[in-house]
Length: 246
Length: 263
Image (tube, rainbow over all chains, first blue to last red; front, side, top):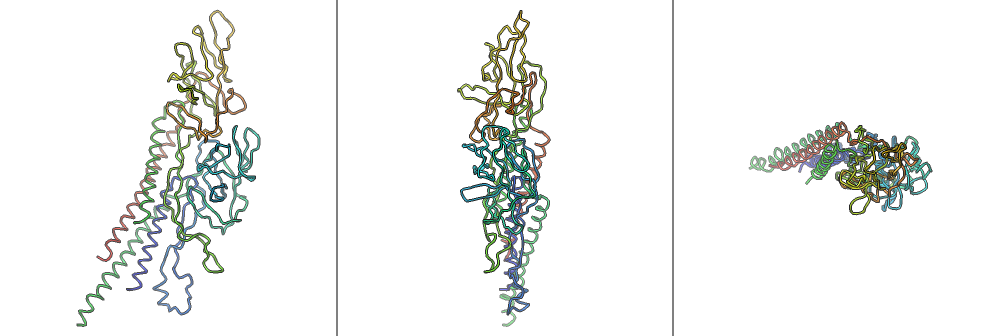
């Protein structure tokens, strides 16, 4: 078969995956602390100067594929809830959480109090302070901009708000948790903690809707191209050409 | 079939639930002492097609992973604790709490319930009860001969009796707070029950330093539902539902075209 058929087929597959990630962004348009995913397309051949490749070979085999997804780290809108245990990170930073699967990071600060008085996430995992878990039982909780938690005026601990080096790749694991490679945490210098507010999703409805249309139309083009190879070229080759020679 | 079909379906059912919650908030926009709820959504699991930071070659790692999320799911619906507006009623047994406290109500099964609705009346014995007939805790009985009732901002209840100039103190009202009122369990009739998420009630006299708030006699706290906000939320929910259904359409159209390839 013509390599163009496979190129179009690969293009269609990458558009299908792109649709999956657009669908996930739109499904999470109301998920607090959600970071939207951006698609990155790349050519399948990482290096265009492969030895022994002819320019023609490169031109027909260098298909576009969905190379990866990146987290969009822009700030989501802050929504006031009035609950003393709702926190939001204003700026660059994440709350650190201790889960059964290791340390996770989240921007979704709708915290609660666990059975033993610890500050926990909505999932029930303890939220980490600078010195381990934070006990917030038995009084009115107040949080300063630097993350210091006081209960009835007595300091109970300081929320661990961390940032990551620019090259760090966070991995989304669901439940609005993100995991990071070990030892990649750095101190969050450009973050402040706000009490009584929750950060919404940072999915931009406009750009996502535009992306949806793009994906749909590009998929349509790939399907046209596949049809073209199938009907106009291959059909001619298998049905019309034999007729000419006989 | 495309994952996006199911992802979009999860988004649609999430917005449907969101709308159910908004409908309940709006339906209770004139329920005194009502606390609106807010649904928190979470993202579902991800399929890692390329793990972020995987090795590209022996020397280099990939600049980004390829993770496809599988949609959203509702997490918790927390009770929003903003203060409702006050309206003056002039009824001596109507009380509003200016602060974070809750009235304690003894329920028929002996359990303690908590409410922000300060609309109390007297039963035939003079006990101070809610509109449902459940007594306020600590119990308060107004003498049948009382001519006027005064409730101080610190919860002190005093009455004037016939032929007496000085008021007689007959008891005091205590309030309760919770470390995490967002985790309270709504059981209807304006009653909240404590849970492990909310923490145990901390009981004290109003006006103290515990942040219980002060009492205002002759006032009622209205619902804390902000109708404007709820309308905005409704528009967002409706549009988000629409965008998710657009994804279903797009996926369906792509499948349809794919089926026609080779015809």
